[in-house]
Length: 354
Image (cartoon, rainbow, N blue to C red; front, side, top):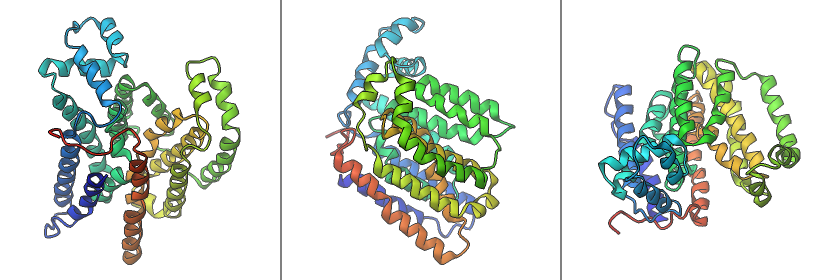
């Protein structure tokens, strides 16, 4: 656990790097590349025996070597994954069957796509990287390799969530869908391109949340009865994810208080509020059906953009600094809880050579 926490603590340290550089853009680029490199090294040089699912992914990766590239039916039967992810495995197998090769490439793709989104949309670059770790997304990539790549593609698609580039947004989400089918949920954002989140929408969201919580179980039973997900619905545990739900609601309320300043600085940040609402709704549904905790990740990961942008909009410098310190000190609670429970089997951290 100590190495995961050390990885987190290093992030604010790099925020002091380059204070002598007057060019703000260049300074942010340097910090971003340093943090990207740190997270990549820690992720790529991990032991293949970390997490419960890594060996399953590697076994499938080893088995695609002897399958003909054009024989997609055999490829899909071996991998049992979506066609896009299956062909990524096949392409990687042409170069090497090394576990390090597989893990490092998947780590590189995932983190680089997230880096591109952070660089373009975050007002406090280093804090976005910090939240990526402290809110548990980064460590989830250690076990959710396939969905982690899909989440990174979804974050990258946000760069094109406007009327002028919506075709690029659709194309990238389709790619994410072929990596992990749950990514299709993000097509909902196509319907609200350039739509402002009004006070009426906010009020409606708060009113609907208790309704979703009370009737969520009945709604899900109706929707998923006689489907392959019905057994998973029966196994879902009541009360699962309550801490995460509380954190999402607190973040949303705090961000709403700063909404006017945030949107005035960058009108594109308006979309981040919709994403926050969807993340809360998914987490509410996850209390009755655990699958929605996975689906909600496509929305909740954007909090690594919403929180820094909201904090940067605070005009009072002292209040802004205090708020940033508050976030730095409190958000690691979720990471600590996840590590303590050893979710995904990633504790203890082991390097490749251990």
